[in-house]
Length: 323
Ligand code: F6P
Image 1 (cartoon, protein in one colour):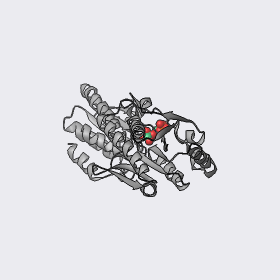
Image 2 (cartoon, rainbow, N blue to C red):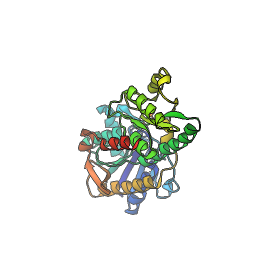
Image 3 (cartoon, helix red, strand yellow):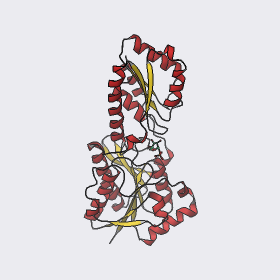
């Protein structure tokens, strides 16, 4: 019986479970056996595997986190360590491995493919920074959590005529922050892709106060040159010029937890099934994602060689609407 391995790696993303479920049920529907590899690449190195049947993945589509657990595994970059992972693949006679994760995980998938293992990646990270897909699994959920926070903060901010800095995740990518700012109607946004002068932010806040706004909202990407902590220190030292009292909220890992949205469940399900189809068609060393609404496979070497860029026209939109 042909056999497939599946693992989740790196930061978890809401929808990973839906992807595991889709991989297992698609593969078993074609008569393949599926082995779940626990704790990401660390489990592949340590031979930590478990058989997954269609029943084992029942009741998980609505759950955040990952049934298989995840891990960051920097030692996977070392060739001798990676050889132990390849040994695990050979020992279990895996005909393919599906790797569900973000940029670091796809780099690992590429390395594994270079060692001769048939690998297909599935783009999954809340950061939306993976080249080869318009959207990764987990982004929609994280965005909605950030938005809910902004909506809630606006009500308390208005009650006391305050400004808020809301810091969102995204590592080195400003996607989550920019989308949160646009969808949340923020007054300003701070992202790594664009240099932001804190003095300009003070001017933006003053302008909002002058327009008679009851509150002001600034969305800050964690990877920006000035994060929320640095900005709040800067602003506190210049509070007389701000126009508002100001507070900072750092959302952090809250954005990664909880149930995936319908969008993420559907995306994860489609990508999980597509990954299995790619393996079965003999198309290894690719990553599946979604491009212009269609499921698309991108060679892993392109995924790891390129950087996904942010559409900065959206920054203009955010600024124009912040009046
Ligand atoms: O890559 C996903 C992510 O949540 C980033 O947004 C964030 O910078 C990082 O992981 C946090 O990593 P950790 O969970 O290891 O603290």
